[in-house]
Image (tube, rainbow, N blue to C red; front, side, top):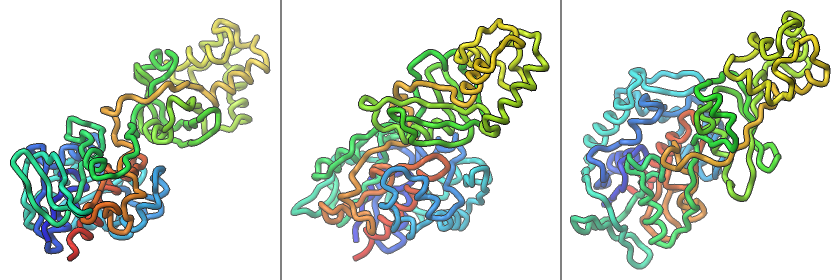
Length: 407
């Protein structure tokens, strides 16, 4: 069985090595001089390999088409991924949020292990760009590059999405799929920073908040909420909480979005009011703006004061119960209107891609073209941060490699 894999990222490397181990003659085409370019920058260069959890937890962290992944995760779930890399000489460790990293904190160790594995498995590596996937009579026959035509029995497309184009993810797979009659859900940035509609964030640039709760509203309807860390930037919002929130904001243009930050999620309104009364009692002769230093980071105080509607120079002992209630509301619902996402080039992953309705979840084979398989981010499946997107790449790559190598 002659198998060609297009794309040398996480899914492509896993697919190529798996198919070769199962007896196929495999050629991997990667247009970059080196494989795994995008893996080098995942997890800030440390490579968040996967999440140390069960398959069900993975699915709960996949907001787009999770059911499509049942078979792939059953074939190669998180514990199998961990065992694979440990067996191939990469000791792993588990950190906060069950995120799994190499003990060395080097993404290069993951790439090196995969590279050694595919070479030992007999994969032939070519640094040529595939321009066309060839098919005849509804069946794959080969691929074309600038150097000529390469015949094969099966093709696995693992070209990634359209995020981080400098790593080679330039949307080639979408074009291949469209040319062969597939529906491609328009790609959008996901796990990406957000742009605010006002200038609130610019004033707070550089401020990092920990242990806050963020709630996303779509046309004033609550659609997502989570707890963790975030960051204010010159253009809007970033940080882990915000990246995960962005995965739910899929309809800019037709829907309006805003985010509410609970600055004190550990305190309910009654307890927070008690805390305010105690702080106000200690600072009763101070100006209001000088009475919040024990409660909030200094940088956010002017914005909270402005949103509360209370005069910054009002004496604390003159603040009414109604004004205190307004302050309380501001602390629990610090509102940012979101005008859009940062460009797809800045996204960690792409949402959208080859419609999973046209791909068999049991094999990753196209339902339209025999011998054509898809794996990884080129598919319309994406997840939150925490190692879940790489898990999708490993699982779909493994299943595609196994399926494509069958006689």
